[in-house]
Length: 124
Image (cartoon, rainbow, N blue to C red):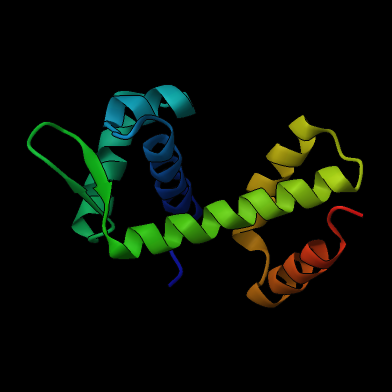
């Protein structure tokens, strides 16, 4: 399932905020990403219309099954790629920024090989 990079970023942020604080609202996403509330509201409307998220009457956002699958995949890629880059000696700040860029464009095949390599060699 391929969606736009910006949608992947929103879904990943919802997952991260949910893990951090237990609940997520549009304003939380806006603050975390430095976006305006209206921009986030438009994005949330699109994600809701495509059944990636649900928003309750109090404005709390939950990931639907398809949204959770995408968010989990992107978040895992981000974690593995940033850890791999740091293991190679890249500074944490740069590794986190670069992983965010790479996670959306890397092929599944290349990502799987990097992940397998990292898993075999971490802790050495």
